Length: 283
Image 1 (cartoon, rainbow, N blue to C red):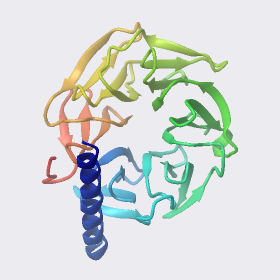
Image 2: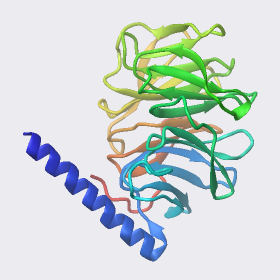
Image 3: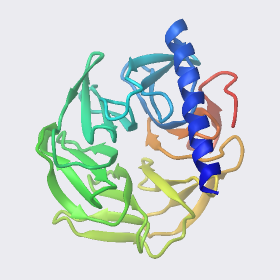
């Protein structure tokens, strides 16, 4: 059993390397395992792909390489888990290979942290420019005040993943402990929004203009709506979604990365789904 698992991971690594070689040679790419996406100020969509070191960008249905990282492990941006465009228009990237959050100045990444983080999984930015980071390795939420280090502790929470900030400026966290969806008080106290574990494997959270939260659930192949009173209902599910992970809100729509669909989707508030990559092969 262990040998079969090891063989599978070796095969995946070789396959990723094969695709990466092709992408480097032609200057284009395709998505292999997209796990996070964000809209840029120029209308492009920036993507973290776990099997393509660096960051990709989608323009007019085509995938290009925005930043090419090294395939060597523990090098900068080798394992980007999350991307987000901050309020000032700069691109942020949470990298587990170097346990660092980066800010891009143009196409050049600048590290914002040099210690304190272990496994940064997601980032969120509030109205004051503070950058919040979920750290799966330390089971903590950190903040970079005004977008700078060193990280300051916000709260401790078991297995935190996705982050979102609601209309009132409150930080929400998707986690995998006793409860799965939390709101963080001003004093740093985690308060469960939904009691227990209603989701199968939640990943991320975003909000519409009416205060409803939307939670991606990879195992359920669904996105759930959570109302202000904590009521959970299924919003969209099934094909073309397979394993939706990250979600960010835009003007009247959401952006969702799905690694099994090998695509990034725009979803309207009415639940209409559109794939952004043309002819994207599914797993």
